[in-house]
Amino acid sequence: MRSHVPGRPRRSVSIPGPAARRAFAVSLVLAACLTTSPALAATAQAPARDGSAAGLDRYYRQHLGWGSCVKGPADTAGRDLDKAGVQCADLTVPLDYADPAGRTTTVAMSRLKATDTRHRIGSILLNNGGPGGPSVESPPDVRKAMKDVGARYDIIGFDPRFVGRSTPLDCGWPVGVAWFSAGTSRAAFDRQVTLQKSLADKCRAAGASVLPHISTRNTARDMDVIRGALGERKISYLGYSYGTYLGTVYTQMFPGRYDRVVLDGAINPGDYRPRLLKGSERENEKALSDWAAWAAERHDTYGLGRTRAEVLATVDRVVAASARSPLTVGVGADAFRIDDSQVPVLLFTGIGDDADPTRAFLGEQLSVLHMAAEGAAPTTLSPRFAATLRYMLHGGAEPSGVQLAIICGDVAAPHDPQLYWRDIERNRAAHPLFGPLTNNIGPCAFWDRPREEPTQVRRDVSALIVAATGDPRTTYKGSVELHSLLPSSRLVTLEGANRHALFGRYGNTCVDNEVNRYLATGKLPTKDQTCVKQAG
Image 1 (cartoon, rainbow, N blue to C red):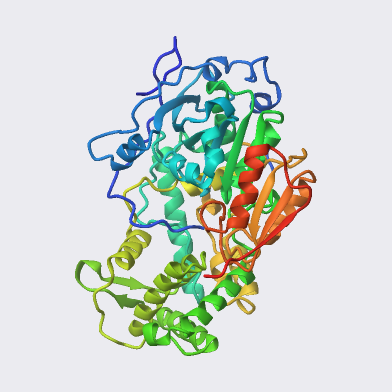
Image 2: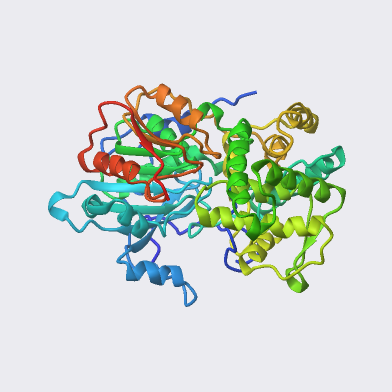
């Protein structure tokens, strides 16, 4: 059941685009300034007595119609949420916070209510990263990660505006990801320029009326409406990856309206930009090298080399072969051609986690690619590998484009393709594999400039920051820098792990205990804490 602001017409925004396609096959991680409108600034800086801003009371005071999470007969995720005791509702928010009487859109929410009501702490809001990551389905997993303290919170998931179960944006992209390598030649880069411009054009055609309103700052405004609609004076927050940037933005825009804040795998806001992974080349090379050592110990399984150096040399040969001519892998309907713009994406995705199952999957993929590079006849792919390639090259069931729409709506990107090419060439000598990936051009180069300036960190926040020293996505350096920007924060460091996002996901008891102790007591550690990777 959709909630609605009483006394106003139902004018939710609908986004034209193709109907939902098949279920997601796999998740691949990414991976002149404008003057802020006074009206937009007022929504964050001029709170009324109930915590809302002038003209927004009807949104903050709206009734949430909590009920079943099932959206239709094929909604198995919704049925699972119902079985877990989760309730769902839709929140109405203004499309444009500078025009609260104008068009609206909906934000999907979920709630797993506290069971220890006698010791209830409040509500905790979740964001899984992305940008564009949904979290409506996350409360049961987070309740489990929070152990005993989870029963003391209402755990609130939400899909940010135009994501997932919220009113969706669909750019109708023919690929599942917009983030590829520039490859090994100028011709490969020029093909990327053409592709990335076409992706931006598709988004502009599909959602021109809403693209200016898709941004982190507007998602933060939606979060504060969630807080108000829940009847909470303050709300706690757990954010992973990009969710740490979103959480930081919320604390800067809405001081005094948050309670306990956990930022896991943090981004330094000064580094947040369309080429978000630029500067992470060394961390990714270290993660790849560690994986190569792991694969070398399993040469009899994968056939990639008996030493770290031999495995890395095999990787280089695979990339070089894919640059000469695309590698054909798989047969029949699951036959794919993979070139030097795509092989690095598979490598990058596979080294984001140092757990054995993730490493084994990358070993499987490189074994297949190696055989193709050596001229072997294609063989049947595993269902998982076929699904990965199908999604990367042809897209999945869910609407496409919102992740880049958020980033492009936050920070302006350089428009000149030659600038990207110069950056790629400067980085190629030191980082031949990942430099052309992290410095490549993307759709934001062909996007309109954002309506607002990026958020600046000017207020201290007593948050708990969690980070792994070998994080190849949001580097440890970024977490340390955010910690320095927030002097009252504390940093929990996990040493020896090449892993992105830790709490409740990596199985490190020390990290999980530190987070849960903070969530239970509201008291940060007296000093920064260090945990070590557990054996096995």
